[in-house]
Length: 332
Image (cartoon, rainbow, N blue to C red; front, side):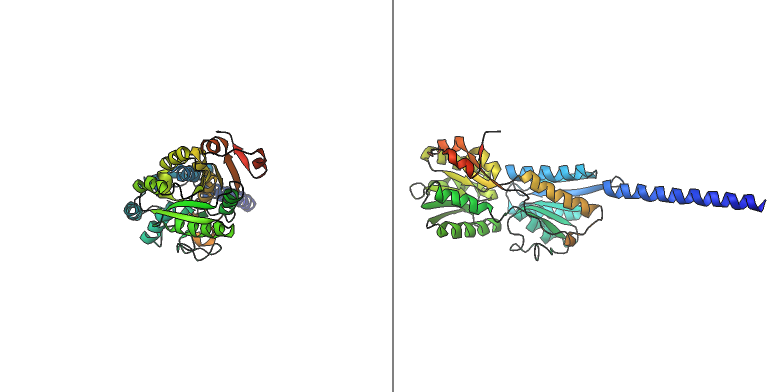
């Protein structure tokens, strides 16, 4: 009788051990997919903008691909600095699990609003200069993300403007109130002057001033360059119209604006950049990593794209040898 009891005890112990292993595997799967919890994520985007829109889509898709159940509160500040802070403060009041800040002003507002809720940013040109992170490798306590400032992107475009278009005077339109734009213009000025050319600046404070700023460059420049400036890109159609009518080649800092009607841009997919940020957010939400443990990332790809149709509309003769410098945009 004692032997039977002992045998039953051993069998029961084995069953409990197997059950325990099965429970552990199930727990691991739940952590991986996030299926055990619905997360609340606040999305604050600075302005309606093709590249920012694409980054937001990529971010959301990454979380979906990771199997996380997420309720998004998606807000757009409509390029209004005051709105960015209101949005961020509301997210903090709602106690969201994570804030996705799309563009420098939105990230600034989010960090002003909280030092506790995790923040993942994207479309930020200079996260160190903006004070978001101490360094790319060692970000701050509750913030990390992706930068859209690839070290070679602007250089490739300026080289094309000065070497292939032979521009001696290059105009730039930007919002002097956007920290990311100030950083870019400083770099553009350096690159242009290294090529023996001159940079002619036209600054704006809001979208209503963009057309007038573009008009002020007529007769003074051989080409115009638009950085990844949220204010100017929001009103880019007016600059494209002027470039076409006055035959001034227009260049931009990202591919989505190039497709709208600029000659060329050296860039990457903002959808992919947002997706990179989404993968970071997934690790943070599932507890795998803290923001401070995730280095800031650069875009993973870079290419020069030339818009043949826009080049011809703006008075340039397209050279087939340009295909050695980049790819021709076919309108797709």
